[in-house]
Length: 70
Image (tube, rainbow, N blue to C red; front, side, top):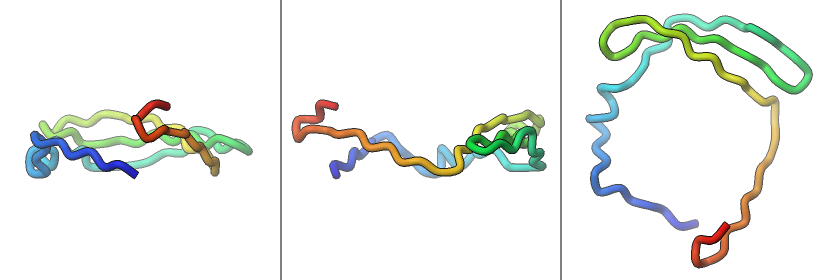
């Protein structure tokens, strides 16, 4: 698989943008989907919420030709 290098990527720059988890709450637990609301502390210290959908398991295959066409 082809790996792309970003010359402007600096790990220390992204580390300062990190959101820290504070709490997690289960919103919905279905047969296929699981919904969770996370409370996070933003880099500036404020609190916010992130809602995410977790799929219990799936596979996705995207064929890509050698010239990068999908």
